[in-house]
Length: 242
Image 1: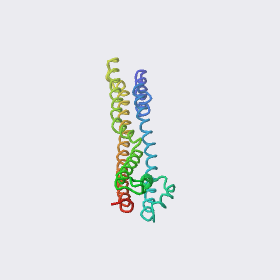
Image 2: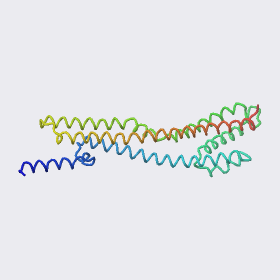
Image 3: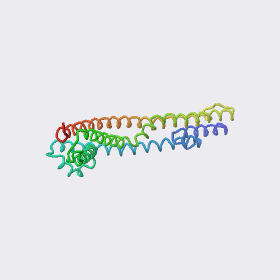
Image 4: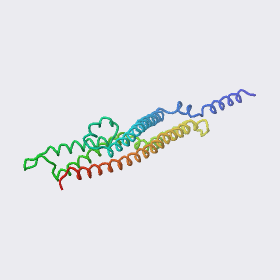
């Protein structure tokens, strides 16, 4: 075998070996590598948020179930309020606490006649307090989910940026070498495809996780609305003047 043939064989073997995803990443341009780092960082943050949210919702659901059962079995609102510290993870318990404190505040008001007692107009104040507390709970549930939505919507485009940059690099090499052989264009095409794959790998789970948690929040919102309505009806029936 001639020396030229041996050299050609060695070169071909080297090109064939360096076509893996890791080799494409290591040989990619700094811009593409930075793009991949951004995508990987976004993906890590998304999974960390998802894990924390999953644990929070699991504790919240369990605590809400225990508090709701206790609420409908309680002999009085006061006795339930005294035991409120046992339900620290419950969003419904916090709404109840806000409503009970407002109810207590209204009970201590004195109307123009000078006698303490609840006023019919006070029910509007109680309703606003319950709504405000519910909004605060829902806002807490939705916190940090914006990163999932952002990653899901922008991940493919960030990956596409890396793809375009990699293909531009391939065309640049073709123009510089005057050759369109596989050895010239393969590195750029490979890093471009890796950027696309990582962009999708970051975006698809982020979208799925975001939709899952939004559905969970809607369920919790329905539970909060149901409890708020029941609490308000109990308060109107037992504490407010007709």
